Length: 293
Image 1 (cartoon, rainbow, N blue to C red):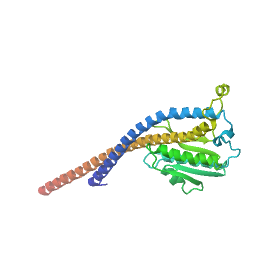
Image 2: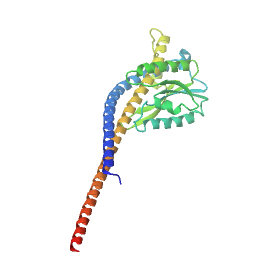
Image 3: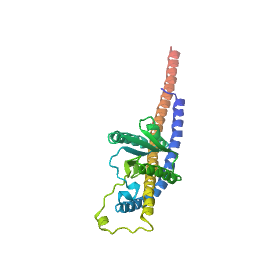
Image 4: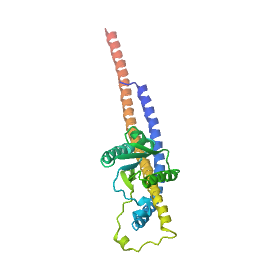
């Protein structure tokens, strides 16, 4: 049975851990609120931009721009995998990595070559020893520099697709649904996949000013950048939500451990007091018997 000093030391240690977990939960909650507001403001913009791109692309031919290329054979796949740099966010990274591994198992049957680019250290560390080709790697991406990171990566991806080095480009990330629910998403950004609606087919052609080539050359690469920015926003918000939930659960678990240790302390102390009282009573009884004898 542990001594009172050992139990007291454990209680102090757990209380210290609980304070850290509680502070991290509050920090994650503040970051989640800010990231969620930014995401809600960005979603309508990215969706509207996608509608514009699909409407314009639906009126163009594959010869009008290299990004409209429709590969006849899909040999090269480039996947951009988004995870976090840090842990302490529950099953956020573990779920992403597990689903990514399953996706790659299926992709190897369809593509001859697969390249992986990473945003976040956890994904890179997990697949660094794999047989897949490694592309670009970005760490330390946050709400201040995600725009520049998206622009750099979008340039790399569009150049690869134009030159035929990539036949399909997929972004893998956690889609934010709520503070408790994040869904793994595999979004194909190139080649463009859209279905012309009846409204689009019946509508008159766009009038391009100044030139169709300049406008298309501007909006198509920008579309790739916006989809990457959207994915980063979704991933960051999901990470903050997962960390807040994990720290809340850790705080509750610490409270349970403190209660159990406190109960154990009280029982141990009571047992020691009882033992001392029994020794006193036995000693008193022994003296009485000795005196009578």
